[in-house]
Image (tube, rainbow, N blue to C red; front, side, top):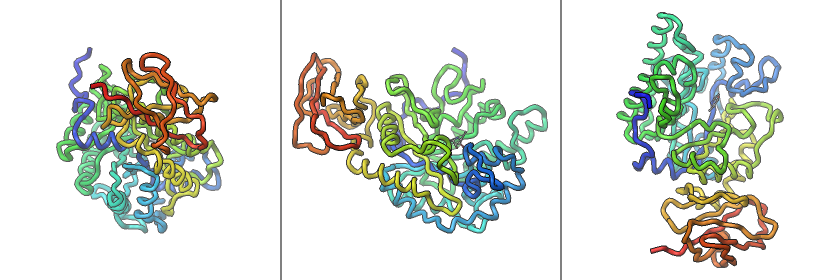
Length: 441
Ligand SMILES: C#C[C@@H]1N[C@@H](C)[C@@H](O)[C@H]1O
């Protein structure tokens, strides 16, 4: 064990109300919006296949040219309430929006830079409108903030000289000021989602990120911070040099999920953030470049995350005009229709502590020891679903969530192991079987 002075701040897993709410939310909407939405992955007639929010580097565009996009940013179709209603109908309980991505453009009027929404044709506090509209729909809002800032003259990837160090000291003050400003301006926000913390400059500043997390949490009680914010004094990120998780939940699952059988991951809170195309966070004009995930694929990812004590943050990339592409609107509707009937297996649910079977995923309601959800994606050809419960567990009854009055046939295989028979399930969608256990005491 190394002596780590600047590692974990809050003992995990947190059991305060703010974290319990974060945990019960399970399903969130990620919004990536900025100047990159204007070119949408195309520059001077050439389509760049890499992530659209990286177009500046993919196309080798100068900072001066890129930054001039701010004078074109005028999302006339932006309607925060319409966005919030779409998110509500989709079934998300929280939303995380980019306040500033790597380009450095701020969606709020910041007193620390002119490279912000105030200096655009739009002019208004877009971030404030978003937060107000989503909160009005009962959706918690967290703020994504990129430490990496391509616009800021004091950003340095590595600190190779005294000049670099002096510049980065100014960058650190700017970063702290902007984060305190965001919490001042938007007191209802529930969390901060840090990104762009992979460079040596940040890994060399573990004490700073430690003290910054402490300061932000003192200012904003209950604040939930992702592990991506932190490095310890040895440069170890997410987990300190002794493998102890920093921040409040693990946020390393970007466009990937753990192995569905992985038990280790269930020990911490964690969140997977996911794109609908293979790798586009910002709006890209051409969605024919890669596979576009279907509603069933995305629902299965949400269910898998829930089954392993994780949250699922699904990304949407609004256009430069402020609306969503039709594929996103359609997916939001399809997912929302499924959530209308099945969200009881998601909200306030988590790891059931049971061996995963081939038909799908178990989730356990956090408020009921005796109610277990089986979310089915693969119907067995004999219509019999194997469940291996804890020794001594006895099933009182099992039934389809959609048909609670019709008990399903059970066949006990051995102590705590059963086949549940559900032969006549017609739906082509994932569906839920509820197991009610006998109360042991
Ligand atoms: C790489 C990278 C960034 N991390 C994801 C969450 C997106 O913001 C992407 O641009």
